[in-house]
Amino acid sequence: MSLKVCLAGATGWAGSELACSIADKNDLEITAAVSRTHAGRRLGDVLGDARLTCPVFASAADALGEPCDVFVEYTKPESARQNVLAALQRGAHVVIGTSGLGESDFDEIHALAVRQQRGVLACGNFALTVVLLQRFAEIAAKYISQWEIIDYAHDDKVDAPSGTARELAYRLSEVRKPDLTVPLDEISGVRASRGATISGSQVHSVRLPGYVISVEAIFGMPDQKLTIRHDSGNSARPYVDGALIAIRKVSTLVGLHRGLDTVLDL
Image (cartoon, rainbow, N blue to C red; front, side, top):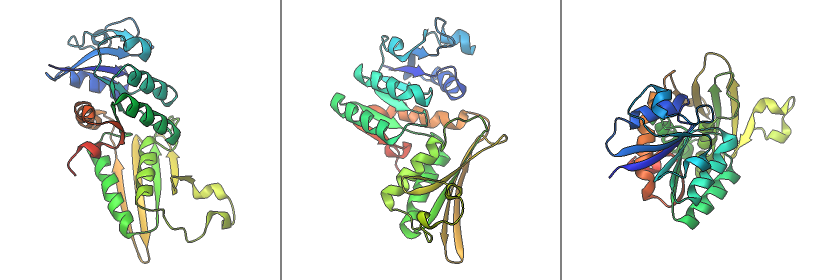
């Protein structure tokens, strides 16, 4: 029996690539899609793939009227929280690919997921290279006490820092808080030039044409430094394989779990 998937953001850059990939799989089936722009149409007509016969709805609330085992959230930060809560209330497990959710959002989602005994897997980035960057950075933070994060993205990306950078900062905070040689309140000059403090780490966001998504963790020690960096290309393909793993594994979880590595053997 195939897992029934409701895909929110199914006609977007990443969502459309994931939808067409799901159409190739015998164990997965998209039963409903969410796209305000294309509501009322069949998903296959929008994406040019006749295998995708499910209807497109204007809202997650409407789409969740269809049978759904796993709800995949790939929309925008301003709608993601409410979509996820609605899916949990309907009894679905949830995979979050949308970036920009805050710690209070995750706390609320976790509490509801536990009450509903459903799993939520939040992956700000499904790329395997990001999963490895996060794990390598956690190892480095055990041995190096000073680091900063640089977050690069295209000039029209509205959320800053990116979900990838936020998640990296959060995960490093679970290892330890970084040291600062000069405390922020002793900075001479423009305090903002030292970046934003996210989960204890200094994070700097660059938004310029020419970038897709990149994130860099820089660790420093006397007379040496370590740089761990992920760069993405123009295709959404690197995110598909990780998203498929998340969809298949999320039902084994209860509550909110952060990072694809929570269901990988790393």
